[in-house]
Image 1: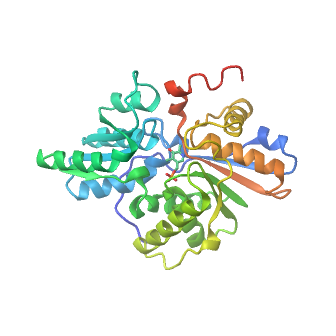
Image 2 (image 1 turned 120 degrees about the vertical axis):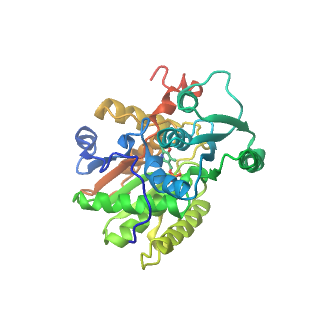
Image 3 (image 1 turned 180 degrees about the horizontal axis):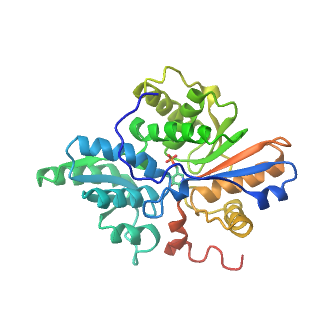
Length: 323
Ligand SMILES: *Cc1c(COP(=O)(O)O)cnc(C)c1O
């Protein structure tokens, strides 16, 4: 894979650790974790890796301001705000939803990190983004637009390199499981796996889209990323493993599976997950282990992508009451 411009924001490589207590509960299977919640930038997460590439591109383009968008409790927005602060750039965040009465969780951190917060209804997100960009441009702030979730080929490339980092760590794994939403993380991993000759499978757990939508997104992005990196390979539908059976009532609405994932990782391993992404992926892993999707003796790596600050969001205040 070709190298593309990158600035250092993350503490790498992130650790790979065995999950001994959880493994003991599932006779015969071995569970591991890769700690991308520990990338180090303002509570870390997977977006820090993507931002190493995206911010390099922004700076190369002479940006003085970065603009991006996400859900109110977006981890991507929080990490973008932190990266911007570190690099001396202004940051504008367009958050989908109502302005909360009280800043909490990620929005509190966005504010603390100095970002300008703009709220928009879902239907108005794109037009608000365009308007904010235009306004910043006219004011001479040299804005640079970072895509939703940091998921374009530049951002996804970070996860192709991340997968190579994991392969270097030399632990034999049959399944790598990750939460998947805007698809860049999974697309990069699938590409990195193919380029490295990884013999296991990369399984994305959808947190908000039906399987067909997410599959198309990951496939397209993985191939665009392969082109960007001159990877010399083509990603096929068969390379993409997806499960969209844990969506419940949708994005950001925790199910009992999600809660179980969060509680078991916390109480068995002392590892904090989040109520939107990693809780859902972990809940799926535990359930799929019980259902026998993973065969006896297989080694499963849960790739932790961060997000725990959302546990402190006002919206989730009652989530674990009585659990
Ligand atoms: C953004 C995010 C994901 C999903 O990554 P995508 O590249 O958007 O698919 C997973 N986990 C956490 C904690 C995230 O913030």
